[in-house]
Image (cartoon, rainbow, N blue to C red):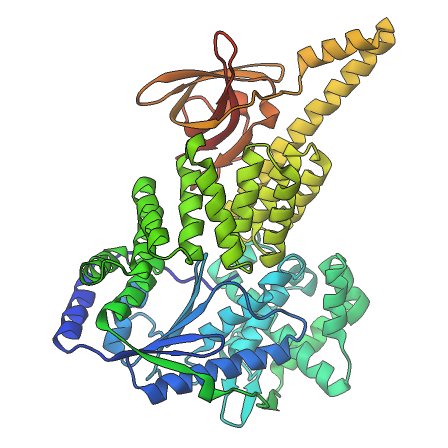
Length: 618
């Protein structure tokens, strides 16, 4: 789990306004130092910017040594905002930390769908002012192992590497966490069999006190195993992760590698009570070519565009909007500001406005994979008409071509083709590529299951959803996967009942063709008419089911439409912005709900609208 950072609006907007006014009275000199893997944007001086870029490159090299088999680069850029003093830092940090008495941040790591931000104070105090940065960077590197890595080890490694000190000639790794040691000495440890099985649904992961035990003990066990493996020249932790990768469950793998868990628990308790702790020191044999760093001054408008984007990602929209509006007034062709305004409107669910901003961004810069991706994703979310299909597909393919390491457009293209029941083999390859690029993304697993259902591979879809359920990181994700799994299982059960009914009828009559007709009449395989897929927003009414058939009406602002499905188990059900409680029963639960319906009209007389998918809204 990423250590949560509360991001909520409060009554302290005047602090930013004052800081902003000061900034315009005395314009800061902003510059960008771009190294091979990082972009450092700072209002300090060039020497400081180069030093920070050098530090982050060394950090990357350290993690490359620590995780030799992990790909440490992904398709999303890492932007470091290095702020020289407290006033300018407070103009950007999360709103919740502006209140009196709140913890003073030295830095934070912020992930978004298309980039990663590091916010840091150049003058930060404290023994480990950038611990949260190293913690989250570890999670970023481990994200491709999220499919099999248990929660305790994922958090234990992040806690272990957050205490990293990078010096000019060496690096200290795994320095002891005094906070964790004190907490563990004052509280009872979890049984290791419990620790190994904690997942996203466990109270030990969400409740404050229990969560602290979980984090602290995960750190302690990871630290103990790392140190003991080094001292004894063993490789138990590596052997353990090898078994996990082979799908051996966490407790069985631990028993095989570590032996008796009660004895391991006693050893861990003794380790926590000891008077001193070892840690690792390694020479920084990193080859950072500082001469290759590219330095360029930024205008105030360019710097404001970066700060405005960070504020939007940081949920300080009220502060971001005037900043971005001023950027666009000073520089109407600023692509970054267009993209950020699109993202701002997208998050506010103003899809028409968001789409216009991204469309402008594409026209200003056809090489912007972000603009191409969001334009297409928003068009799909808003229910683009059939006439827009070609542009949506072209934008997704352009985004993939421009940045083949960026997973989201692969997933959207798979969903696009799956929804239209076209090129399903390619859709399957696209979603597999997205999963490979971002294995920890549960939503991608759900799209995989959806494509597999369109390919009539129900058992494979269920297997994917069971794996997604194991990987779910929050109660909301768990509920979302459980709903999809329940739908797939109901559909599989209906197909099984259909087959059993057909065989029974054939046995009684000896007429196979009659049996097939009877079975189809009970639960037919729906053949959708060919034609453009259309969308309608409104309220679902008059929902009636018979066997597997469903009839309903959609009451929209401009019209009321009758809809039909010959097999409601094959309708794709999703929820936008919320997780329905419990299993969804379409025949009982849809009545009166706000939704967006995807449908195809037939040319029959009278025309019939066939339901393809239903997206439920709050």
